[in-house]
Length: 133
Image (cartoon, rainbow, N blue to C red; front, top):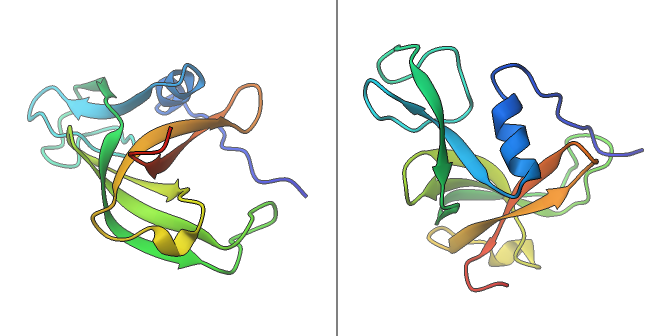
């Protein structure tokens, strides 16, 4: 069985469109400047509804990490590192980090975004160690 495929919503479609192009974008509030993820109807910081997707350089550091040994569902290869990424330009993302060996993903590890096609329409953002090319 294959991995579940995310289904874009009106709020998330610009995120998935950017990911297809190999670009990372995150919501940014026009009122308070907060960058946040996941997209919500209103800014979680000030509740303003005036936000738009802003480009991110896709670089940051692992804030927290766990190694998943039991698949959350069909289609997931285990073990894998699941981490909270503290983005340099603001905001945080929960994402897989592929460092080869999941035990090599540690708090403070510098990472950069990478994209992997799941289908013709959906590319998933992953993170890899910053020195990886």
